[in-house]
Length: 260
View 1 (cartoon, helix red, strand yellow):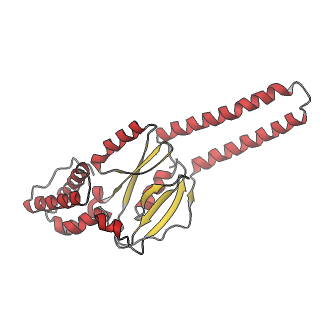
View 2 (cartoon, one colour):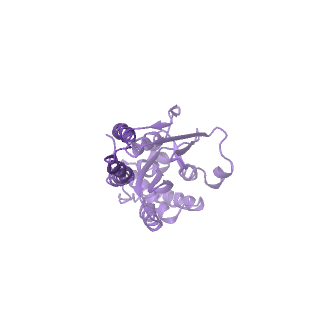
């Protein structure tokens, strides 16, 4: 839901959102994120035709605590039954799986050095999450992207290489529809590779096999002068091929190519 949705003019709703905004500020949310969240929720209320914000969202203090995971108290006293899960996906499937499992309450806390998503979920207080990925090469680019997304409630949840990942509770765009009544068990899988990536792996394996065969033949006939140009060519082609593959991956990631 866009934050440009029309706000309800009901005095009771206005008081509700004023209290909600204040509680979000006290919990430490930036002013821009507070304004964007309240605007989206007010727009949702207006479009739903309801005039009772308490009925739609619950008490403002409880709702604010859910939107901010309980504020500082939640950080100091994490739920004992909280679940954790690490998993990885290729760049053609990561957004699909992020949003699939975000919809099941998994919140990405960070990315580790291997590029795995470190997730957490607390039964009883879990929210639905939505994710997006951006590309940023430099610190200036990353800061600019984060500043541009912040007004719509997006916050950084990790970076790996030049891939930037952002999250926000679905409650900011879906209202009560973001509630989780039942949690699905965490998958046993830890690695998700899509069809596009698997196809590229097969191509790479075939090229590596061909290169190995050619290299073996060149070594076998190493006494011949004719093998020298081939050995030099192979030595140059290997790093060039890796470099071209790297740039192709970045170009496709920037273009947003992903599995269907």
